[in-house]
Length: 186
Image (tube, rainbow, N blue to C red; front, side, top):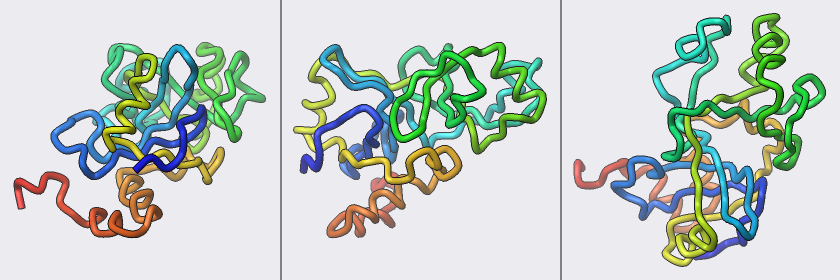
């Protein structure tokens, strides 16, 4: 079922039918870009077993690192809701920004001026070529939803986020919210 056309700032909610896809099974993705050249997003609800300090010892914080997607997983990306103190940020939508001056960001984290509710770090990103996302939607891989949490999204998204977003869809989706992640193991 195609709910809404994808747009920058929207959320992609993995359909329950995406089984066996290690990256996207039960994922909620924030679309950071969607245009005629393709789409880029970050998986919001797949924390890794790393903190920012594990990857960059000069940053004195224990913010979790998330799996942003299967593309360029050796690169670190970040989104945040504080463009007034992180220069050169690019607005995604609804008060959520992508990137910015990393040296300033590190300094502000070390000074305690940026908390985990302001910023989220990702290894890798999710990417789709021209029309690829629309084809996946035709195959019932994704539900598109507006980001109703706006810039509070960073403090909300968690490992239970997919279940919450699926329940919001109502109907038959409520049944899937309690299904085991891998029905073959049931």
